[in-house]
Picture (tube, one colour):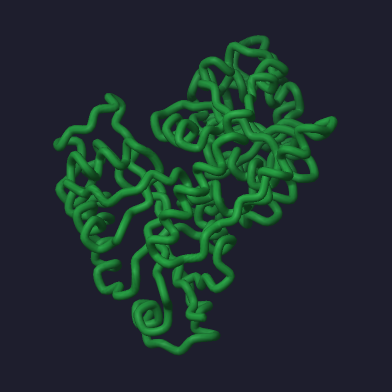
Length: 377
């Protein structure tokens, strides 16, 4: 059996993370091909050279692999005309042009503009060219939601897309049965909070409450917050909150003391560089993950634990609708008590949806002759 080459999003984080420009939530998505296919080989790094002989990664892909799976995220971004982003479209297209085996795109998304409108002047020419290239290069393109499918169709004339949602949803079919069993029991554990915009009024309110109630805090990106965590552990008497967290101590009579904030970030802060300990932590300690980080909550679902998505942008709202995930808006959550937030998570639609969702995703896999995913509920 030939190996399946995998590129794009990383399946784990480098040692320097989070002091590098990465987001650990992406590895939940990046891990999907390796969970699905036992013969998947990572071509982002040179480890494949231990087992296969080839001069370059592209030679390895073309000469020895059956497929090239490329994991994407929200690569297509409206209203981003920076030289860096224009170059990114061109660079990725150039790297994919020499691929001779079937190119399988996993979960490409388009980040909607604030207006929500699809207009030709919202994307640079390089983005349009890239979408046209994929339309010609790929038999069919997996996209995260209907908005992305419309972008391909209306701006690039590309019709061969299939709305699958995020591929991370399909990597551990057994998780749905595990979650159903967990929901029947006493639901032991602690709440696990995650945030996207540390300057958002609604998220700040939820952050303050998470600290007061000794919930866990999930960090996926901020090097400043991580440095504060390290300082809180090593030198608590000298640790100073970063700018994004200073609101917690603002005013003459803040609700939290400096000592309480430092102690919280020393003991309740969590960050992960690999999916396996992340899933295991959720299994052992968490009764609900909630917040605005899509993959932060997906990590709970994949561990067989409840997740509640607090939607704050069109991307998250689209993904939760597509996959029928429990969701409320972050503004709604900010007005609720913690108990009300937890009670608002309705899992019935999600448990009804997998047969149809897996059927669609398997339709995509079968187009490329890849093994289908067997659902277990």
